[in-house]
Structures are given as structure tokens and as C-alpha cells.
Length: 176
Image (cartoon, rainbow, N blue to C red):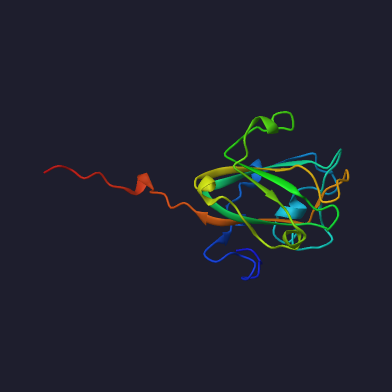
């Protein structure tokens, strides 16, 4: 489990950090010296001195696959008051997205982050749109000040795993 304080995690939900398939995680337009693990990985994301930063402009496109199907309830994104994300779009189970096609798909949900959100207050998503999530694409469209640099100190995803039946564990019932 992650080192979150219990008050940060919405009641009945867990931090989905342990269910991320790290081998498939990607981030487009990240600074090579301030990359995604700084904001997403346990230990790094709790360090206020580490950030994910955009490179060429303010936009970031983050792809997070999970190692099992999850239900996504809410998220928290921490960032500085000026360069912190503002408009964040979420896409459930959309793979191979890039900046050239991100606006071709309707997002599963959109959030406008407030100053309170940037301090870590979780934002509840449209829960019905995130019931069988195998992967999540997060498009950070702009930041609070409209500058060319976006900084993200922490990304936390809250939800639960989907209970599935292990078909291998079932035994065939023979007719007598």
C-alpha cells in the first residue's frame, strides 16, 4: 500500500498505485529531467522537490495501463498555484492517443482544477464512465496561468479492483 494518509483517500476506495502496469506507462511532452515517475511513483510523488514538467509547451499526455481491471472513483493532482494543471481530460480504455488525435475522441470526463484541488483535494469522476478500466489516458490541456510550462507534483488515482472469476479455478461438473 502507498504512504497516503487515510484522510486523503476517499472512503471505501484505495490508491490504485499498486495496480499500475509500469512497463506500459508513457508520457508525451515530458521534460527528460522532470519525468512522470516524479509525480506518479510512491516515494517520489511525496517529495515536494520532484515534479513532472512539460517540455515544448504546457500540454502533457499520460497513458497509464493497469495490471487488472479497475473501477476509477476519483483522482488527486497536486501542483503549484501558477504552473499547476487546469483543464484535465480523462479517457478510459483509449490506447495509442497522441496530441494530433486527442481532440478526435470525446473524453470520459473533464475536470477544471481549482487551487484547492492543486493542494491535493480529490476530484470525484463520473463513476459510471470508469467501471471497467484497463487503461487511463490523462490529457493535461493547460495550466492555471496559461504559461508554456506545466508542473505536476503528484498524481494519485483512487478506486477499487473489479472482482473477476478465475475460470482456471473452476472444476467441470460431470453428469452422473
